[in-house]
Length: 63
Image: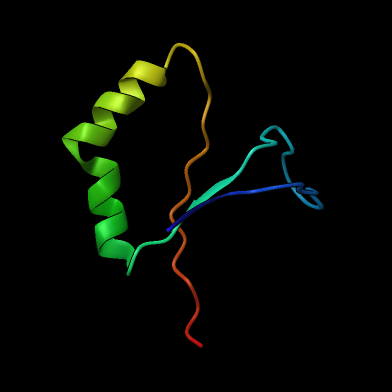
């Protein structure tokens, strides 16, 4: 599942990024596999000269 975020307020840390996209994976393993996949790495190289990104893979808490 992917969602584009709406308004955001940074209350701590760097506020450099104003747009957020959340992609849900079943767990950490497929998320890391997606990031390291040849397809994503190709897309990453293609956007390198035109956009900055901050990527974080975050494991959810149970419950």
